[in-house]
Length: 477
Image (tube, rainbow, N blue to C red; front, side, top):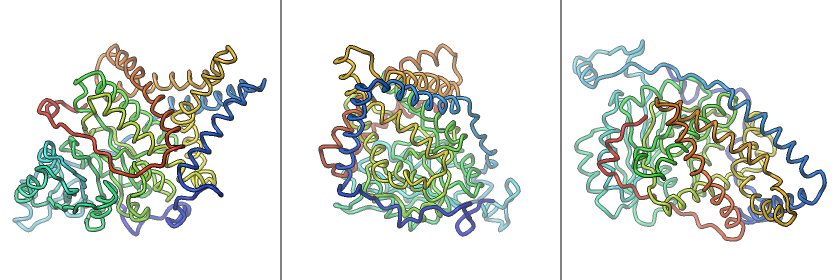
């Protein structure tokens, strides 16, 4: 039912893996130099536009182009997900195997269903590892058609001992323990394991994931399309009621889900988000696995997949849950890592983007969202400084107004799409969510400057997972 390795024929030939290596500007070495050059160009251009008489017309022209794309996104119709596979009870499968007969499900024998490998990289996760393993090993999918791999990255707490006990309880559970000093962080852990897996589809979860029982039945049919190389699940914050920070993160996830669906419907870029990402084995092999030289392996793999000719789809329901960070300092560190990883991929693959190795719709979509997500916060400081010196409004105010409007509408529509609740509740959540989102301006602006002057040491920054009982009882949307 699913087109797997050896049967994919892309409509056109895309960049081979050997050409996806990181390249520098001539005469410059490394990401820091490229970041410094990019920052200098953006700041200088902002100053020049303030000084010339036609600068405001350039900004208005840019605003008009971005507005056109924004309207297309807001008016787009998201793609409908295919119907899920029929439910499977383990009792029926056990009975069928004992009797030596084939059980037909949804017109196909159950033993021809695609094999799925689920991977989790875990380090010091004793508070959440047991409920995660229990959920993964009791999915509504034939137990003989999927496996669960937990990579214990040299945990120093009770994670290893708990996993050893769980292997005796769940036959499809595999545990690999990495020794001290293993390199590559999460990417290295995944790369060490995935070649040994059997899955036609490889899924990755974080250790704090809350996985719905019927997840695979909804997900697997999306891979019926031969061009689909990966699928990202909607992410929901399970402890969203904890405080204002977690409520803001839930609104942020709703905005991201909305943009993901709308951009994909227009032929734009679909993106992976780490927790709840599923990749076709053939696509992952073509991309060479996960990149161990980046701090956001999911965003890096996103571009490698698109450059290799694959599409990334998005599944809205069911959602995978995860813990939102509850303290401002933890949020600051996490968002800085996300921002730097997202910015880093443009520095790494700028040549391939500039050489139009992607279809025009994807190239334009990437450029538009780069301007809103990264370009606008980066030029905010010189724009504001020049506006103060010249006693005028900031030059990029029209673009900022467009970005705010797009965020407000997208967040409201996203919240309405994922949760059944009164309109006024979605409205209040949208107001707080956009106020909360202002922290990205500071995160992006300071990150762009820091990356330009300070070399980055790659390391796996761990987010502490609490796994409290209250969080486990929160229903997913």
